[in-house]
Length: 148
Image 1 (cartoon, one colour):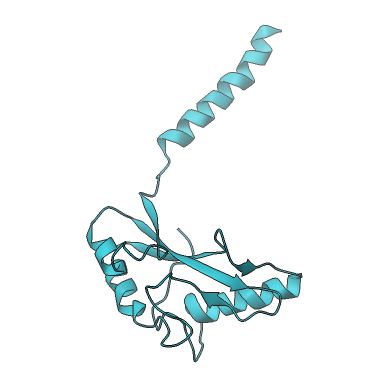
Image 2 (cartoon, rainbow, N blue to C red):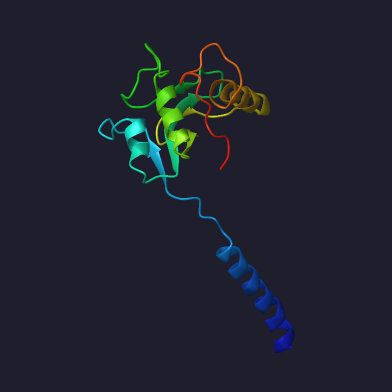
């Protein structure tokens, strides 16, 4: 009876070892956009320390609200927008760094009230950050990564 139980355990251990050995960890990621002293996005990518930069945060969305990005002083989406980030994002991407958008965050006004609300937010994200079309893209014409 002990031999029968040992086979599945040995198989499971073998599978775990194979997964660990063949995993591409994806490099180091960082959140950028919530610390006014962190430097520009271009400077962050120029360090060579990061493989992924999460622009933080799209902190307002859902429940019929106008989605709003909050980058804590790096740019003002209410007045002049954050379209100047487009060249920074492209500079990072030219170095092979993936630039993504982090939604939510520790503070903000975000929640989804229904499946339709989720579809509307997804459509907004596609059209404004991920390659769709919009006349008012918050970060200009740069296209963010949609997956790792």
